[in-house]
Image (tube, rainbow, N blue to C red; front, side, top):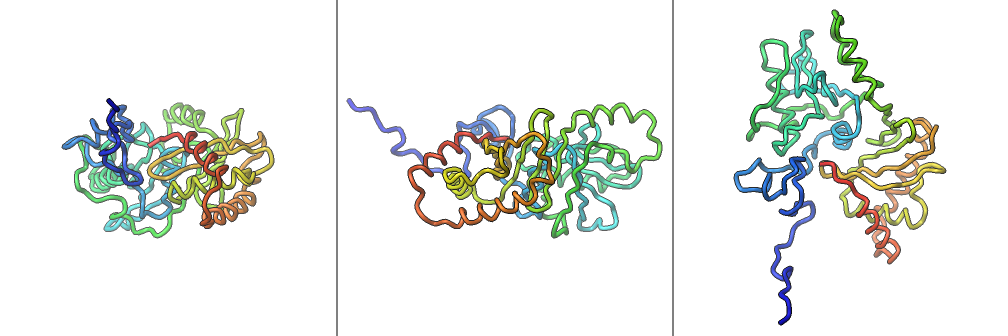
Length: 309
């Protein structure tokens, strides 16, 4: 007797929908159906939490790729309070009200409640409403509270990438006893720079290697096809000696990655990155059917994706 076709009556999934048997993108280690996909489970998982915010691609990079960076924010109803978003705060705090009166919120915090934007908004509001200085965190899911999209009045964000974490003590007068922790944090921060010619492209060095990691806003299918077209034509090389090695998938966006020759540095990437952006835009606008070579290259690129969140 012939085997039944198990996929015949299988429900179809829309683009971006998570398979119930896939690992939950929240990082819990559970399958999605047993975590954020479970009825009454951990809560609805938002695959693209920063969508609609200015500099969405930069926020993804700061959340997952950049060691040390800060972004000033303007919050509705708290326009007179200096607010700063940082990659990583002292003691890995979710948020802080500082003795100086400033309020800080951290991006690189794993609450695992399903919506990074709502989680950051919740701790930010708690810190803004706190009467005393100190660390603020979340002990339970934020529920249906506001998201960053509801709080911010900024139409563009100014990202400053730092060599280390000296900004941790920029508003502190008495710095005794803080140097040790600061030196340890600085030693762990890989040299990183944000390119100014294009959006959300970051050069970094590990000492033995240099990389360009570039978070891009285009839909995944369109971007994969465009990158495959460039790969087949040999136009995916940013600078001579560079090699396109794959991409990260994080918070609903793709971040292509290139290995760079040692000694390249960030400055040498500015003009080549701008030129590559023009070539990529042309490939994205190409509506012709992909050739067999492009389809094969696309499959290879898809197999080299690493999902972070």
